[in-house]
Image (cartoon, protein in one colour):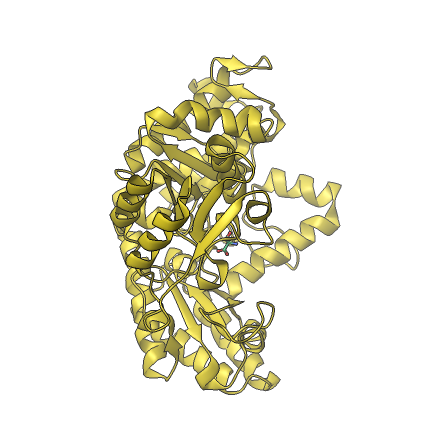
Length: 460
Ligand code: DSN
C-alpha cells in the first residue's frame, strides 16, 4: 500500500483510524475528548458521526455499552477487551465481501485482498501455535466444534467429552446440544473429592465406550489440562483427540499453559477470550486432517467466512507474538492466583482450592448465598461475573451454587495483584450483604473510580 493511498482522503476507514491512533500513540497520550453523554468517544470521528446521524438510538446504546465496559470490573472468564487495532480491523469494509471457498479456490471474484488477509491469519495462527494446519473461518467456537464432528463422525457415532456441570462445554456432547442429540455422547466428570479430572476414570470409560472422538477442555476448568494423558488414551482406543482450548488459547499462545498442539489431532478454539481477538473461532490440526477439517467447515457447515473477523484475528495473532503479550498472559495467571488467595482468605470455597489459569470457580454455599443472587448483587456493585454450576451441584443450572470469575479483561486494563486484593474485598462485602442496595451503589462508585486509573481499550 503506497503512501499516496495513506494520504488520500478516500483512504479506507481502517487506515484512517489507524493513522489517527498512531498519532495519539506517538503523542504518548490517550484520546481525551470532553465527556458528552451518549456519544461514542473512541470511534474515529467520521465513523462515530455517521453512525450517530444514521441511527442515533443505536449509537447511543453502543456509547452506553462502551461506558459500562469502562466503568465496571469485568470478571466474566470468557470476556476480554480486544485492542483498538483489532476493533478497527473488525469494523472495516471487509464486512462487505463474500469469499466462499479457500484462497485460490473461491466461488466469487474480487478476492485479491481477502486471500492475502486470510493467508496472513492462517500463517500467523500456525506460527503462534506451532500448528501444521489452520482453518480461521469458523464463525465461533460452537461452529468450530460442529465442524470437527462433521469431519470425523456420522450421526449416532460415539463422542466423549467432559460433562457441562463438571466444567465441560455444551458442544462436547451435553444432552441439550445438537452434539448430544445427533451423536451418542458419553460424558466424563471430575472426582467428588478433588473436583479434578481423574485420568484413570477417563481411560476406563474410553476403553469401555470406544469413542471415535475424545474432547478435552471446557468452560469452567480452573486447573492445567493434562493433554498428553488425553492423547495417550485417544491413541489407545483409536479416537481422534480434540483439545478445545477456547478459554486458554492466549495462555497457550504465550507458553503459560502447556500446548496441546504437539499431541492433539485437532485443536479447536474461540479467538476472543484470553487470546483477545475478535469474536470468532479457529481450528488447528495435523496436516493429515487438513482436508477433512477444511471440507467440514466449508462447504460442510458454513457459507462465506466473515472476513472482517478474519482480519481482526490476524491482528490479534500478530499481537500474540509480541513480548508484551507474553507478559500479559503471565500476569493473567498471577492475578487469578492473587484473587483466588484473597477470596480464600475471606472464607470463599474455591473449587479445587484455587487456580492454575485465568479462571476461578467459587462455591458460595458456605456464604449462604445462591450464585445467581450474588452475581446480580455484584453486577449492581459494578463487578460483573456469571453464576455457574459447580461440580455435583445440588441446585439447578439456572439457579446454581457458584460463581465463575476470570482475570483476562482486568489484566488487559493493567490491573495487578494489589487491585485483586481490593476486588476480593468488594466481592466479600457484597456477598455478605446481597440485598443492600445502598452498599452496592457505594461500591459501584468506588469501582468506577478505580477503573479510571486503568484505561480499557476501545472505551475511552
Ligand atoms: N460461553 C462461553 C463461556 O462463557 O465460557 C463458552 O462458550
